[in-house]
Amino acid sequence: MTSEPFSVRDVDGSLVRRLCEGLGLHAVTARCLAGRGITAFDDARAYLSPKLSELRPPTGLAGLEEALDRLEVAARRGEAVGVFGDYDVDGVTTCALFTSFLRGVGATCVPRVARRDAGYGFQTSDVDAFAEAGCRAVIVGDCGTTDVDAVSAARARGLDVIVVDHHSVPDKDPSAHPALALINPLRADSTFPFRSMASVGLAFYVCAALRTRLAVRRVIANPPDIRELLDLVALGTIADVVPLERENRILTAQGLRALSRRGRPGVAALLARAGVRAGEPICERTVAWKLGPRLNAPGRLGDAAPALSLLLAGQADAQAAAADLEAENDRRRSAQDRVLSEARAQAAAAPAQSALVVAGEGWPSGVVGIAAAKLCEEYGKPAFVLAIDRERGEVRGSARSVPGVDLVRVLSRCQDLLSRYGGHEGAAGLSARPAQLGALPDALARAVSAEGKGAVAQERAADAEVSLGELSTELAGELGVLAPFGRGNQEPELVSRKLRVRRSRRVGDGSHLKLELESHAASLSAIGFGLGDQDPGEGAEIDALYAPSISTFSGTPKVELVLRDLARS
Image (tube, rainbow, N blue to C red; front, side):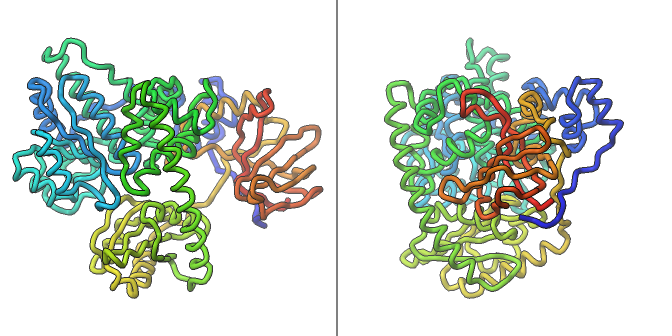
């Protein structure tokens, strides 16, 4: 529990009034829009109701025309096309999306996803498998930008490779890449205005453009409805934690609606396994906490093929595929709990540095990313969790960062100690030899310090201050229209002051806090996940920072506060 008072974001009051009057919004909702830099009526309407028609065309997306030319030939000839995806949710959904669409336009697809034990990305063993299956072209999704050896091997065997990826591009001439087409918005010569799309979003763009081309040129009479693939886009985009802005926000909002319709048999069966009630709308939390971990589980432990099988399953196979994923998720949970416990013990004993680096033998490399995310959140600084494999002579790790510290730049400063690295600003992977373990922690800490010097601390401020009496299901519902929430579009946070704690108790495993709060004649319940050790005690007077939500647990919708932090009034 902090002793500092919570601040409220300063916004233009006249702008708030104009948004209220022009759009019929509650003042709190208008403040949230203004605080996100949305000042024009047209922009606000588009934000409140994201539509596919507002997606910008893929003009300037380097590599797209070459990819369309080759895929049109494959569709006309009914060629066998290999489709490869990395082992995480973005990679698997990218593979499933391309496979589903290309089959619908006449191509024969050979889908394949990565095995973690084979190493990150596209491998020469994958090239061999596609060549032996008779493929003439291969699409590589969510990897491939840096897999030049495997792509070169495919080219040598007569395979045309199309890479659809969103990971960092080395500072080299893109035309030197051995792929027939490299579609990556981070290419220096790519002028498409949005650079933060997940690979599955890029795959959707490629398929939408291909559908238009095939329809205009009358290659196919009844091309498949591209909107039926939006559920896959939402899954991969949310799970990959890319910013939910611009194109990502539109695709995700529409994709969540598609997920709620439960048209994909495997996903419907997985939702039931995860305890999501039939007819319950699917939101970003459902994907992040229920579907994402289950789809990620097989790839974290080895072969991601069960996740792909579920996404492509028909009605007859859906239940068995969901049962397989549930079993894999149970295994993942067990491994994750063990690694996190040991990593926390190391972190507690580690010297104070700008970066937290822990390492252990026998840690499955697939769960170290979860541990890194937890430690980064708990310690408020970049965390690196390394799995040591003495038999293979390799250290493989994951890193998570805080705002202002770019992990790719950090790792580039340490590249002399690394065998490989890549990822995004906030999440990255690395590998090294065990001999480098002694030097790596200090090198990473120095690199984080150097990168963090120019970082500006980001103050956490509430969107608005309200009284408990102002909180209604109507207001909470209106704020929910600002969803989907995630990186780049944070859930609205409000502050209420001088609240009396009528009841308090720890719930779950004791790590969560349940409060009954009152102020004047109003009273509401609140839940603080992970705040069990901040119990203020009954009778205390507190200020609360929270996100309002609507609970239907009792059968009647009512407002519940999801606590972010507490302070003594």
